[in-house]
Every structure is written in C-alpha cells, then in structure tokens.
Image 1 (cartoon, helix red, strand yellow):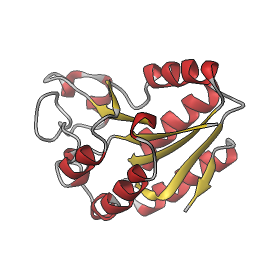
Image 2: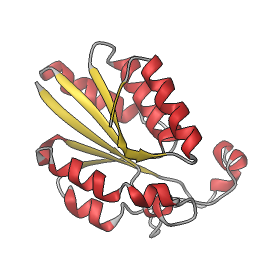
Image 3: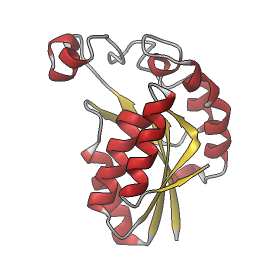
Amino acid sequence: MKKILVVIDMQNDFIDGTLGTMEAQAIIENVIAKIHAYPADCIYATRDTHEDNYLETSEGRYLPVKHCIAGTKGWEIRKEVAEAMPGAIIIDKPSFGSSELSERLFKESEKEEIEIELVGLCTDICIVTNALLLKTRLPETKISVDASCCAGVTAESHEASLTTMKMCQVEVVA
C-alpha cells in the first residue's frame, strides 16, 4: 500500500498575505511534521494559481481580493514548507479543485493500491473541493484529511467542511 500526502495551497497569500489568517499561521509546524512523516517521492502539492486578470474571472467577482498571482511572493509555497518537500510533485491549479491532481493519483492507483491524506489551506474551499474530486475519481480509495494540519477561512466554516467531508466518506483525523 502506497500512502500519498497532498499538501494543498500552503502559499504565502493564504498564510500571512492578502487572505492570511492566524489559524493558517498556526498549522505550519503541523504541516511540516506531517510532510516529514512521508517518503519524499509520495508527496504532491498544489498551488492556487491566478493571472493578473483575476478580478475579471468568475472567482474574482465572488472573491474580489487579488491573490496567488503567478510569479509573485504571495503565490509561492511558504519557504519552510517548500524546503520540507523538495521532491514534491507540484501542480498549479487555476480553480479550487484540480482535475490534474485527481487524474495523476488515479494513474498511481492503477499501478498499486494507494491511500491519500490531505493537509493545507483552506479547509472550506480547496481542501473540501479536492477531497470530493478525489473521492469521486477514486471511490474505493481511502482518503483522509488531518484536521490539525488544515485551517479554514473561519473556525465555523472549517468545522462545517470537516462535517461535509465526513458525510462524503472522507475520513477526518486530528
């Protein structure tokens, strides 16, 4: 059984940048410890990636805060997190979920049985979206989220997302 860690959007803009929160800052050490618990070749990471025209996009109209613009400091994965996973497969995603991530992990599952664990930001947007995409593409694969390595936009929306994932048969661990 191959165990795969997916580190979602641990980027500067979500930690202490334009959309940063104290809760996001508080999980950095937990995420790094989790990364160190996995072999280097079993780690995937995503980067929320937008262009300069972000405010003109559908997402930008609903969330009118420029963030994770490709090539900026805010778009970069937090330095200490990136340093903990130098061999990670990084996937840039222009929306909340990544079909590329689910397809790559589906191909991994064709080679051998896998388990997937997700950590990162934000529980209530990108974590829940990717967890449900993965569960849809890999319905028989064990998918889990470590709540101690995630943070939402608010504590309430974080908890609501954990409940949603539990209802959709994603295991939530702490």
